[in-house]
Length: 295
Image 1 (tube, rainbow, N blue to C red):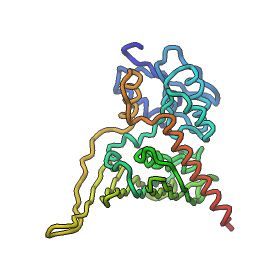
Image 2: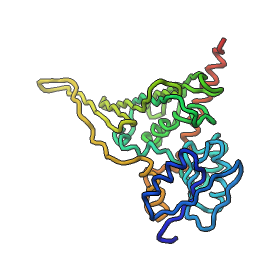
Image 3: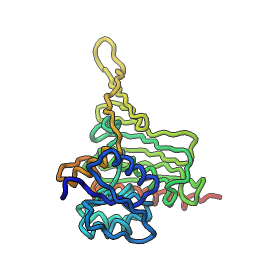
Image 4: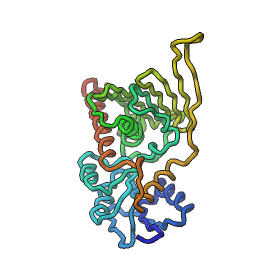
């Protein structure tokens, strides 16, 4: 591998432009921009790796030939449109997925093995990402974070409901997920709201409460003083690093290509877990609609 990395950036839509803008500040990486038709992209012989930043429905068709050619590939979240497609991609050790919230500096305030999580991710309507429903578009970010912070735990129960508002797919959804560790998470996702919000409220095993604003990149922690002269809550601001999450993610991928460790980067197997959970949420919504069909 040469001192200068050469990457293929497959997909030059909004996310592709975001990646290109970041790499513009890192001349040690050279990008080949590929705006794919609705078909396959052949691996360039000179590429050291590739980034697939196309719509979700194209992830499988675009990433598979690159992985089969032996290239490490970073695929935008979610891994694929279906668990079957995701399984075919995740079997490659060189498959990685851009679950960028793992690199959000405020996410560092999420405790290991949280006991209860309330996650809210709501956005105003934009004509973007509507090739999939809100579960795969937005909620999957928080489902991945929940699983990432609960290593080794398995999903034992999923309950959910949702509604269509602006599209023929679910645009607003809420889910409750229970793990065999005893952890419970409730997740709200909307792409038809009048305000923006990306927040987590987390309780750990000893009752410590952490309020996290992933959008504003800040966090506060509340502990409960049970003894002493003044029992009660103690609030403290959590120190949050100052960095760009997407930049940290792509630099982690570039470092991985140079043989360095990238512990925060989602592997294909981990991203497949988030995708499968997202599909369980979608199936629970479908079951709720069948029990109580709209008039």
